[in-house]
Length: 275
Ligand code: FE
Ligand code: FE
Ligand code: ZN
Image (cartoon, rainbow, N blue to C red):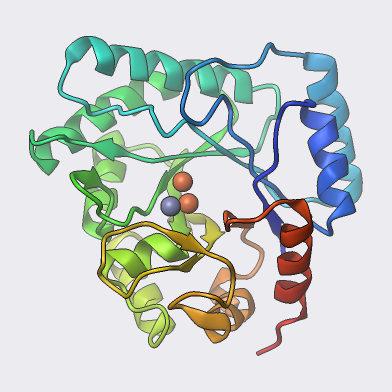
């Protein structure tokens, strides 16, 4: 089964997102658990969540991949800001419990000069705390472009976080634009990159993908998403990704610069690709 979807607005609630996804041919989706740049979370509505869960099951959707706020930096230098970010993470996971079995992806964070080692330690501390209550959610670290002092631009850094947390409730979400911008050549050697992922992290820890083309050449560390087939990755890369046996059944989420009609077209395009 190919599970393909895109980012949706959560302003109408959970069930509304499922219905929107169905309309545009998606069978998974992502949404921001709160304003991507701010920190305000929508009020919770458990009846809406239960209705959405029933509909997801009925329609055979793949796992959803909720996205934490970009501003949540678990390894920032200021202890108060770090504690606040950890509170945001804890609260996000608590609210995800209304959608049992789905996944939550976030950007590991930027160490802002303290060094990757220190950053990885802070991220692990926050994750351990957030996982403590045992909410039924899989938490995913996103592969990053390595912009500035971002952590997660190498598979080794993600593995270090996974090891420090030591929970099989934590996995990885691979963003095609980010890994390319980080210097992994998925355009010419997808098999080699997946083999490297498997060697360092283990493909069993890969739960989801973000499908984005890139506006920049490999290794640029820029993180600028392009529409599918309109960037340096090109359509053939996405053909290889969506048809790869090792990636079959994993939710694939578009984060391309599109509104709904553009997403609908890209979903159809990706569904039509054959190896
Ligand atoms: Fe992201
Ligand atoms: Fe992403
Ligand atoms: Zn990005």
